[in-house]
Image 1 (cartoon, rainbow, N blue to C red):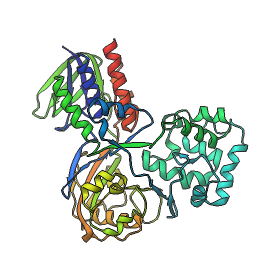
Image 2: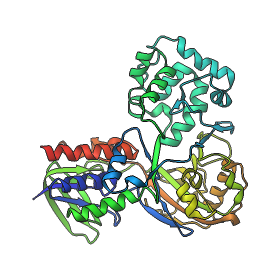
Image 3: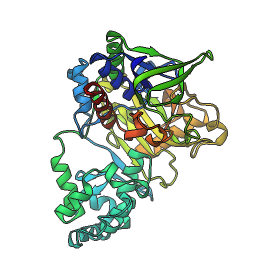
Image 4: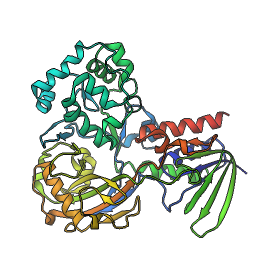
Length: 449
């Protein structure tokens, strides 16, 4: 019998286990793989230690910032380069992302940076939002429908779709506005227009950058969490998969085939119960990282990167981050080379837009594989980077490359038995800010009970 069993060694599990153990609870954490950190891990490409996936966190709340301070990393929190990102529309046009938007929804539809993307006709249609009754679109079931009714189809397609697709890997028509933009409906009713609602929410947001990072990589959060768990004596069991998750017990099996039933007062899980679900939906993201020796990129031709409309011609990447522009500390470490991170939508059969034979090989989720710049993956990534950044990048300029595939949450918390506390991406959605906040709240409730 133990106080708490935590299933899953991603950031949510690490944060919850650390807080619980620090508060005096005896904690067992089980993780099916041999590595802790989930999507927040590091890999080495061309001699550079880089974040494998998440390289930043949102500042819409202070959860990650406060955690960083507690872990001794407060002075290492940094903000990205202010040049900002660009977007590519369905027809291949590129422009900086307008400054006064929220998920691409413009707060000032007639602003010059909005006109540069959508044109005058579409901007005038969006401006009509201020003349519509506030009830129009207020009950829309999706973010896409809300924007479509208030500001028109083109603003939705040119601005909201590429930004939302890049951030959430989902079309706005498939997203609940209350989840991805909390408070937007209420602000619409209160302010009388969607544009004014956007400006009101932005005014209430924390001053400064919308995202921050950690010098040396966001992965340093995991390093310190793991160190704290050792200090507070969390019982960490790697290569141990949960086979059934109940309110007061977790059945596990090790890679060696040994089974055990762990009984606890409380159970927290960042994955669905495999005994109650049919298995994960194999969709997600493949991140291809290129380290490039090409000085034409010194000018940062597309700022810190670009978000891409899913139907943009000739480009299969859904986003690119020019990481050595985004993070000055990384530019210094790279010594004149450039780090480019391209993300692709994936399915069970591989990476969309890349030859099936190259993409359908067995890529373990979360495992970094070095890539030959001249193979199908490396060549496609270099071509996409060239198209997005406007600078021809030959494979010979690529001095290192790697690919990592990430799958999204297998189900939602509905896959958990009553009484099991759901944490992590499956329960709270993507984003470190929400994941950390929810995990700490769950641990606090247990300690207070």
